[in-house]
Image (cartoon, rainbow, N blue to C red; front, side, top):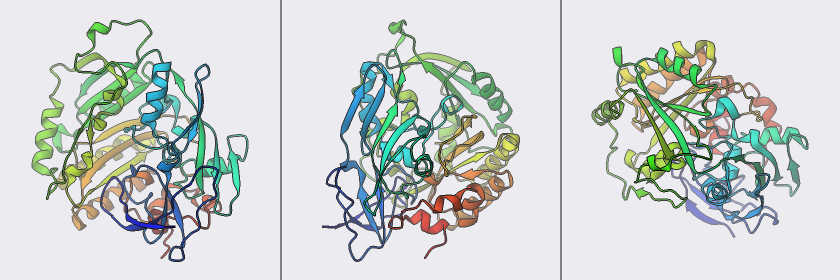
Length: 448
């Protein structure tokens, strides 16, 4: 029996009602759609930012109900689990046994099914590619009751459509991953202050060979001589033998999680032009020296925002949008500069601004976001038409440079922007389950 509930995404802009279709088990068929709904959509842990995981007027399949581990081989690092298992739950199991996720996004609180559906990427894309590159197989359950075992060699076309397929090809019931070996839960890290975009690109090139993980915070609040300044972070998993005496006392040495929570939603966004400039100035100067080396637990390196649960509440009751784009390498410097100039001139933006280089490893999915080049991601408080005018200007810069936007972070791009960025969209449509849809998909396909 379907239940009605209000669901939102991480951006908290939309809160539409949905019919909920509980999942009995991974072995059971999909629930029947109620007469009031024409389509359904899997919903994981709600960490997509826009409406790619929402289905206004339709039904949701609560994927977290499929939360069981099926098998793990500590000798080979092959893990099989249901699609609703969180990455944090995997880490809790495998890190003490000497394994780690091959690719992880900036939060550990996403489901395996969601990581596949969005083909998430991490700080090591230049080495490892995206999440789907390390999925060995999964089961896809369609609305007609059929089940497909998909892998790079079996039903490879369905594998490619489902990786990055935004949950539209059917329900992933379980998946198998190849993990990567680590010696301990620690990271050898280095934070380098840079003062221009040219310096960022030089650091990125110099870091590709010797550092598995690279990412930068960039100041999006200022133009002029301060445009493009930031902090470049790079790191590797710590070796088997190391001096643990240099670890900060405040950091955990195990896998117990400690976090604070934003307790309420303030009446107004706490992110504004004044707080943004103040924070960015302090953050840029937070380290005393231009280069700071350290040894730290993996959690603050990979998941700094997970230390503050419900941090999306700081943007107030109207929520926020994230804008993430990817630009081809030959136009990356010019386009990134133009994007930052437009953002700083607008007086809008966020202290959560991330700049990173994507590498050459090709993604498996027809609609996978990563491409060789540069990716920029920023959060913007929802300020209505004023913000959307800025987005339109940013879209023009991205499209002129031959780039694309990230569907998992999007809540407003139009059909023309989507189709220009994803030229294989027409091929993908033949794999969409006729009973599956989303707010995002109907918008970019211009469906009523």
